[in-house]
Image (cartoon, rainbow, N blue to C red; front, side):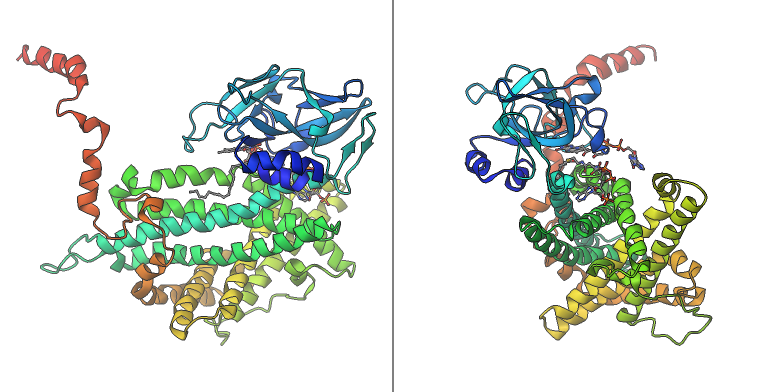
Length: 556
Ligand SMILES: CC/C=C\C/C=C\C/C=C\C/C=C\C/C=C\C/C=C/C(=O)SCCNC(=O)CCNC(=O)[C@H](O)C(C)(C)COP(=O)(O)OP(=O)(O)OC[C@H]1O[C@@H](n2cnc3c(N)ncnc32)[C@H](O)[C@@H]1OP(=O)(O)O
Ligand SMILES: Cc1cc2nc3c(=O)[nH]c(=O)nc-3n(C[C@H](O)[C@H](O)[C@H](O)COP(=O)(O)OP(=O)(O)OC[C@H]3O[C@@H](n4cnc5c(N)ncnc54)[C@H](O)[C@@H]3O)c2cc1C
């Protein structure tokens, strides 16, 4: 995050000064924004940067215990520099959060500089090798030219020039949220690879006396756990490609001072980061549990994969908060649509009349047709967004201000943003396959994946579709059965579909997911290397167990 911030927020002179040092690994940096007391509420950050025109320096301080920077990756023992986000004060006025490059440690002996107190925040649930750290600043001076001034400036006499958009300072977070969508796709693909390969190797239970124990991958319940997640990993792969394309296009526009799509990008990246990381987080646990006891072993790779992935639901914007950000934009779009404005591409459906047509009993509609089902996802999203938006309007009519009305409708707003994200993902998956140049055999297999993703997505949220009369109960039941009917077809190619992710064993780090499937021998070998097995009799025996046993034996 240090380098992307410099690349996006430096003037050309600052780029020339700082970036070569980064690319050549002559300095190592972190992104120090979160504090002990604030991670979500950026305007509440307390670190200060007061400009001193006499020396043309900024004086950085951590004025309170809650202002100590806390969590930034590699801050504790590794980083020599940081981008520090601080409240800018110049000529007696506060101008809000701005980014500053701060050297933390000497490039000679790596010792912290004067006015800098840094350290590691202590053991965490995962990310063990990462020294997430703390930073306390005490009257630490940096040159004026260390404030990243691409968008806003402080002149030598202290005059402040404000940015074209205050939120341009938040740009790096948007970029990393887009990366996290990709990270979700990768993590879910890894977990699917481990679980499906192991399920092809593992044989368990005797269905009928005398019959060989079947592969657990042959059980419909095992397939129902794993194949929708496999399909989701493919869906997220195509979604992260689409998300990155939109990010690149909008970022190019921003670089040409066209800020017209910045809000749409923020809303989409926030919703997709939250949606994909939540779904992946839950999916990792399903994959682990589908591997029985061995899934709980470190040898499976699941404990580390989960512990390293799960914070992506929190960092880079806590997921609920990001869903609310997405929903806030959607409410704005409903208002714009009602006042006749044209909406941007990813939300244009909100101005269409997608009013639910009561499906009644046997509707005769083709419930296996993906284009038709995507139109139902659109209907569900539009209904949920309009419902939440109407709730906000009713709150205001009842005398609330906008903040109060948004807060009181926030549960529905999160549901609406989830439905919007889900529609975008399902639509993108289906549309991406249409554009894919692939053999008819491959198209057929991928169509099976898209189908099970779309069917299961409706089955798992059928309440949304039934409550709004988008589907009847019997239609929902039919779609649920369509998902189950697809499972044995996907079974044929399941191992090939995870092999296609091409994770090397060294990357997968899983005995259960080994490419050669040689699990048991390697589990036993792995166990031999356990530290506890260095000696047949563990030294602790002589200190604790031995005396205890002997003492009690003497009583017999
Ligand atoms: C095996 C493992 C596999 C994979 C692992 C997973 C992923 C790996 C891949 C990549 C990950 C790489 C690195 C990540 C690793 C760790 C690093 C983590 C770093 C961090 O966590 S950095 C700190 C992150 N912190 C946050 O995100 C803070 C969140 N809070 C906010 O953004 C703001 O406080 C918030 C909530 C938006 C509120 O802002 P504000 O107080 O200003 O109030 P408003 O809501 O009124 O907003 C005002 C206005 O601004 C608009 N806006 C807000 N944000 C943005 C934005 N980013 N861009 C554009 N516009 C924005 C908002 O919409 C409002 O506009 P409006 O007035 O409505 O027009
Ligand atoms: C592994 C890891 C790495 C990190 N790396 C970095 C880093 O490199 N740099 C950095 O600066 N930070 C980093 N962070 C910090 C991270 O960005 C914050 O933890 C994150 O932004 C969440 O903020 P918070 O911790 O204050 O949570 P809080 O905002 O306190 O969240 C707690 C609860 O409050 C709820 N909540 C908060 N605000 C609202 C609201 N407005 N409406 C409704 N509910 C709300 C949330 O939904 C959540 O349920 C990292 C964190 C982790 C875990």
